[in-house]
Length: 136
Image (tube, rainbow, N blue to C red; front, side, top):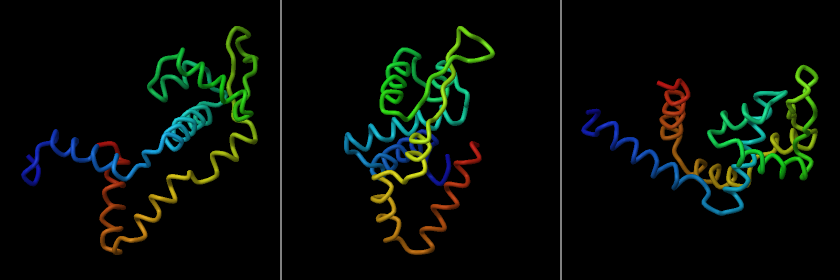
């Protein structure tokens, strides 16, 4: 037990709070999913479909359909991998890079919520994020 709570109770509370702070609009959820895919492509460039699927934790068929949509939108380019002609290489286009550099619509809502907090509360949140980023 930690401060009277079990790890399971803390996990449940954390999940509920994360949902509360995250935007719940369907467009914002779709944008987060797009950004997650774009980020996975960027992190693995030249990425394969299987690498992207593994990074985002989804099946290859679903990721393939999503990548098709990103290719049609001009955010990802799909080319033949010069090292293996049977494999396709995925890369962000300039438009995809620009999309990733812009803040999300939901981030302005989060920013607004954070701006209302006291400096001591912001420091506590920053410390918690640091702990979570370490992955312990």
